[in-house]
Length: 399
Ligand SMILES: Cc1ncc(COP(=O)(O)O)c(C=O)c1O
Image 1 (cartoon, rainbow, N blue to C red):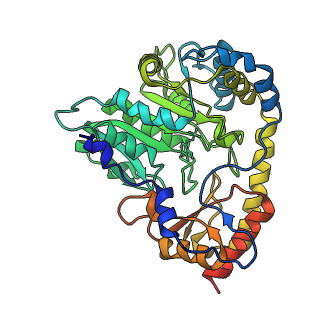
Image 2 (image 1 turned 45 degrees about the horizontal axis):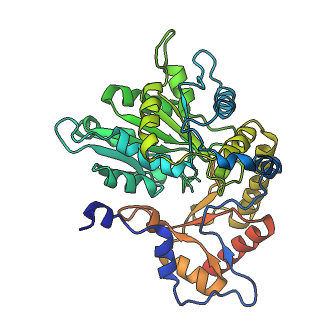
Image 3 (image 1 turned 135 degrees about the horizontal axis):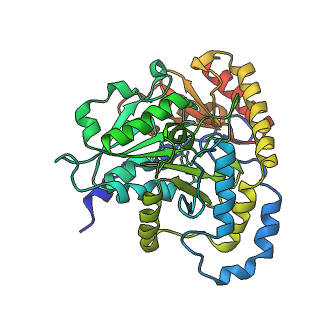
């Protein structure tokens, strides 16, 4: 009697990893295991968050509005306009923004809003990079679309090759999930690439969902964003400059607040209005104290700069410890290492058994065999622990 589509969702990477190492004691002697599998930031959260939450506990007595507070939307609009240099076409806090209870739920539920029963007379397709954040595939399947996995390997700089997509696929595409900086490879899409995607969305009438939750963790210059691309494409006087585009941002990685569950979606005003309407049925809202704390976090860059410095120290250590082993190149963005170790699943098991280091096999994040040679290493812990983890990886895999 259960819905077979939901019954057949692929197993999530983390239970799969738990099964892989079930009953295997962590190695590493008396030293504590080092967990580098989950992308859960461990850096300090901004100190003003607790203060704001405490001072507003009375607001837990109110139902929060689906569109969040004016104050939250203004803080987000100011941040987006500033961060992505939006000058001639600005984000309007009233029309272009919707808060999310973390971006995962929004990334999932958008598929239901934008997937018609048929497109171009066929089953709609939802495109996504491969490897990918698992939520995209679950959403595509649950919404009745065919997920199409676009290989993003080294030869295409870890981004999907847009030229490899056939006209037949484009014409039935309802939604394109793109992640930049990418989880797991850390690849960043250039402004030119994003402009091309935004243009393709208009030409083939699909929605572009850009997952930008790692946009504030980068090494060199700040990654470009989808709004910037749409802004640059828009002509003077255009009614909807962010046509068919939605960008997703989160405080989980930017501000080390994964447990606050706070993000937002911004972009195409008519999509945002429809999404708000849809979410009035199903969408979780952000409690008002969370809304206020989030507004303060989007208004502050000092803690974000400090956060980047902490990641830079860890990437400096990775540069030194890994050199160019396992195809390592310092990623442009994000906090993961995507290491080619030959057989990622065997390496993950060995790292746990022999060194007490938990990493994720790349194959659990991909379809086909593109992820098989890789492990994903999350550099989210404290510096010393991360250095120790990287040393153990090196020692174990290259004895
Ligand atoms: C690529 C990507 N997108 C979205 C999310 C969801 O983040 P949150 O729901 O905490 O905003 C994550 C979390 O790990 C992620 O890696």
